[in-house]
Length: 104
Image (cartoon, rainbow, N blue to C red; front, side, top):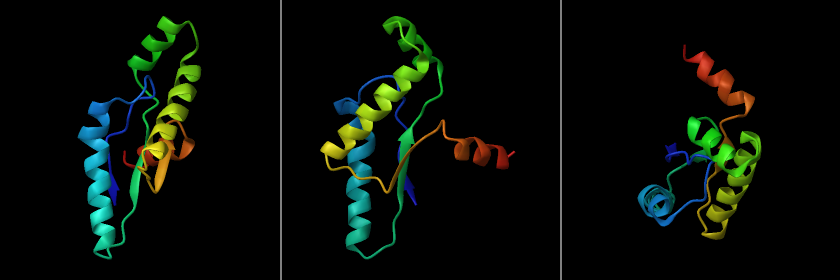
């Protein structure tokens, strides 16, 4: 299993994000698959944090609207660039809350 840094759902991805976190992982995942390795690449939008609330206040909309806007935009950006996670999810989903509680 490979994972990458989860982008905050409070703004669009930029070149630094792509070059520093996602392109290297994409290359590595493709390399492992070329070697015949079974690989699952997991990532998703981090939908928790003060940065989301701050952005929502600046834009005069709710934090959920910010989250939905940037999750959709970032997922679309990855797809357009050919970066294809096996799973691209959202940290607000119930499964993530349950899984984190299972660790305690």
